[in-house]
Amino acid sequence: MKKLEVDFLGVRFPNPVVTASGTFNFGKEYAHLYPLSRLGAITTKGTSPRPIPGAPPPRITETERGMLNAIGLENKGVEAYLEDELPWLKAQGARVIVNVFGENPAEFALVAAKVSPYADLVEVNLSCPNVHAGGLPYAHDPAAAAEVIRAVKEATDRPVLAKLSPEGPTLRVAEAVEAAGADGFSLINTIRGMRIDLETKKPVLGHRTGGLSGPAIRPIAVRLVYELFQNTDRPILGMGGVRTVEDALELALAGARMVAVGTATFADPYAPLKLVQGLEAFFAGRGDTWLDWVGGAHR
Image (cartoon, rainbow, N blue to C red; front, side, top):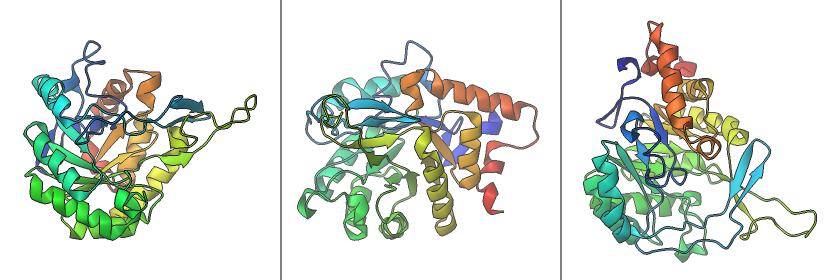
């Protein structure tokens, strides 16, 4: 449907609906349900230079209006994904956003360079810990985040998205990474939370704290996308509790040019496709397009 088509950093997407990193793996678990090419793009699981075993179980628990997860950046490492995941995903006709991370700027750059042949966009996870700064996430340190983006930009010819955290100085980090060459932004990432079991009197998650996602954080996402839109001319991929057409349109009005579905997929694997279909139905009888809504709250 042409009313949903989006040009995002020179890449043409058939619609603005993508999957959020960490919620769709590399798509194999969903490919028997519907063509992955039906979605705007698939954002991969976070990919690092080496395999990471992840956090101890339990890793996921439900909350009111959302969930907490502490996966611990578990993944098989870039070489495994280059062998058995990324070529397969690209062969499905899907547009691919590869989420990358590492322990230092050189590792971010290494992964970005390796995945570039399969990536339409590279998403840089700035919420992972900087081991050389006491474990403080890169997204909390504008200078360190900028160093990562500079390294990635030198390593890839693909457009680079900086994924921002709602817990750091978001706008200061955005300003720093934009100056370092970030082509666009994705936000928000999860917000740290905790649940405690009343029987054991211990934290529910093995890692004690986890990232809160789902509808509970959507108003925060709307605010931060709105504020970032006011401070940049770079395109924004918005996420945080997106499930319905209304959710997507609200983020579009705030300034998101594309939107990602994450937590909703755990409850309903068809959630991203249903959003595409819902947007098609919404715009079918209208004279405007998706892009007419982007930034509409600022006009």
